Each structure stands twice: as structure tokens, then as C-alpha cells.
Image (cartoon, rainbow, N blue to C red; front, side, top):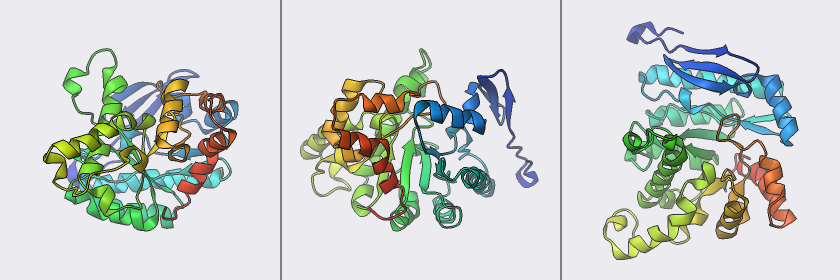
Length: 316
């Protein structure tokens, strides 16, 4: 696709390498190895069957958020991705649901696309970045999106991108190992201390990768509000039970840690995640949950009932 008016060529290509991987080229930046399941639907269905996953909630890969492009182009590319996602869901309605990608740098347009995706395409919400070009999600520019999301009962899934501290995380894969959960944590804290979660109490916000550091540091935030003036700027009453305000996936790579989070936040705040098909994912996600030392009722909720409720498109 060539957008002549602004001399952009947002070219995205996938060049298969072998049965397991490909090179994923997004406007000249090549991501490899990109797993075959990321683009091969029959392969994905086989992997779902092998893992014991009945329904996979599709979302755009963060590499194609493309928030830096011309506003009109960014909106067009988000719509194209959502339309294509809807086609996959229509072809496999018993195996796929979906959440939209949004032109988040233009929040009014993002709200319009969220409304279109849910009302016209049957998508269940959206997945988007933890910041937009360094702007945190509590910025006033995002108010139209939060208002729309609450109105629609949208499932809003925050995934890290454009991470903070990248200059110090270049070695050892730390950009992912630490940078991703860190940026998710910044996003969550911004929504709390920016007053967004108070202004829109029915928002359904899920945090990737077990919430980053949020469930484990939320009490520190509550204490900080008491002893410091800065957290009081937009939040006039002490935040209570911050960890219970968000939803979390199960991607923690440790049964004891996941069991702690479930006990701390409540099983009703946790739902199955896989991070498929990436290297930091958990292809054993279902068996991992089934092996936890929690009740069968909690396992059933985490493995499906909670997702069905949250992605219903109804206000919580």
C-alpha cells in the first residue's frame, strides 16, 4: 500500500523461512524469527488444539500499531487490520473472537474505530500500547476513548510498547524481560493517579504479563498517597485495593507466583493468557492453570468463564 499524499510506504511483508518461522518486515524493520503461527491459520488451529484452547481472542501484533504515521493513514491501517481480523473470525466463528487495534495517537479517531469495530465487526474491545510516543494513558487527550470504552463495555487490554528506560535495557533481552512489565506498570499507575479509573469506574482494563509489577507494588502506591503530596494531585481520596481494580492474564511462568497473584487479587480478576506465538509465551497455558493449587471453580473461571463475561460487550 502506498499513501502518496504523505510519501509513506507502509509496507508489511512476511517471508517464510522454514516450517517454524519467518521474517516479518514492518516498514523496513525486520523481526525474526517470527513464528509461523502468527500468520498461518491452519497452524494456529493445530496449536490451539494441542494446547487445549477452544477459542483464541485475536489481536494485532504490537509491531503494527504504527502510531507515528500520518493520522489519516494510521486510522486507515487500523481499520484494515480490524476488517481482516473480522474475516478470520467469520471463517472460524467457533474458534476465534477478536479485539481491535486503534489509531491511539488520535484518541477521537480511536474512539470512532472502537465503536465501529464493536458495532459493525463484532469485535469485543481493543488492545493498545502502554503509552503513545511517550505520552502516558492518563493524558487528557485520551478522555474521548475512555468515555467511549466505558459506554460500550469494551474490554481494554494494555500491552507494553515503546518501553521506558530502553537505553539501559539493550543487553540480555532486558527490553522484554524487564522493559515490558515495567511499562505496563507505568500505564497502570498513570490510570490510577491520573484519576482515569475514578472518572470511569466501569472501565474493564486488563494488564498484560500478569500486570507487570502492579499487583505486587499496589500497596506501595496506596501508602505513597498518604505520605506524599504528588499522588494527591488528581486523586482526592486514598486509593484502596488498587490491585483489584485491574484484570490480569496468567503469563507469569511460575505456578507459585501465579497462585499468589490469584490469592491477592481474587480469581475473578485473572484470565487465561498465552502470548502466542511469541518466544515469551506459554504454550502450556491451559495445563499450567489446571495444575495450580486452587479450586476447580477458580480454574474454570480463569480458563474461560471470566473471559466470556468480560468480553460480552456489556458494562461491568
